[in-house]
Image 1: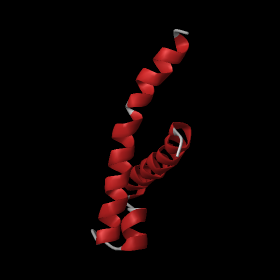
Image 2: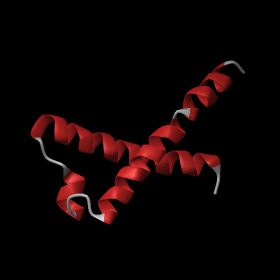
Image 3: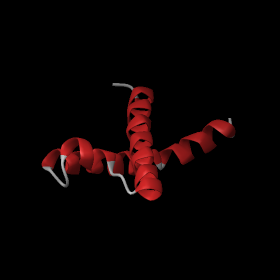
Image 4: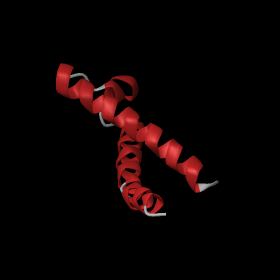
Length: 70
């Protein structure tokens, strides 16, 4: 799997997580917990994937900067 494909997959997961946090902030509605149960194993996996995706996408700053310098 190419780096670009991984970037798009993780970006999608992080956007879903951001939308969920927006719903929590504005409406006190946790969509992930609503769909999969409050702190079920599946919910925890989804939260972990969002966190890992966010950490991985921190590397995007370095990659964007190196592209701009070329």
